[in-house]
Image 1 (cartoon, one colour):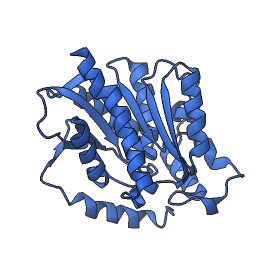
Image 2 (cartoon, helix red, strand yellow; image 1 turned 90 degrees about the vertical axis):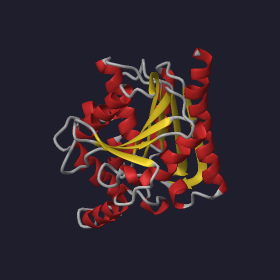
Image 3 (cartoon, one colour; image 1 turned 60 degrees about the vertical axis):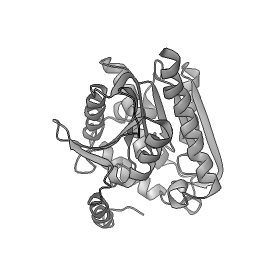
Length: 283
């Protein structure tokens, strides 16, 4: 459980992981001061699709390095460039700082010579999925460029879940109700939730196609399915993958289990249809 007392311990573990940089990962510091870990596909074409990946951690912990393996898999299996962003964390850096960091990284990725700016997806897991959803809304509203797709892996979308009294912590693993309260309060700070929280946005129209995956024993199950329904109602194509019996972050705990492999395979298939095959159709 993440609490104010345990937060420093998690942060130390994250810093240890940051020191490990595989030889095929480029660590860059952007002009905005944000770090990005770049994963290039083998035998890449001159220009091609890309994915901006946003790590999870309840807005409180984690780093881009923790997802080196999954980013490498996306790059290898899809043949796309993957950039993982090290956004600043709450509570020291509340909304909108983490979101603006992600926007700065996306803006940089749009201008990368090896990337087709019309074929960029954004994605993330847990809080990273929540930031990806918020980023899709921000991109739509600012209108400076477009995003082709949004991959939301058990995303943390709605702060109102933290006030529900009908949720049983005993059924939830890795991310509990108490951690959720702490995460949202730290991220929001003094911000207006109606502005900062994706699920509170009254207008979901005009967003890129979405994929949402979540387990039935995940604290975010209800809010994720509700968001998917609202996307569909707003005319946004949305595919949903519900994994029966799965808890939050199950695929990271048992990545080699058949259910975890199948969960990742559906993400790859969806990205292939919305990025790689779209590139071929437009060529």
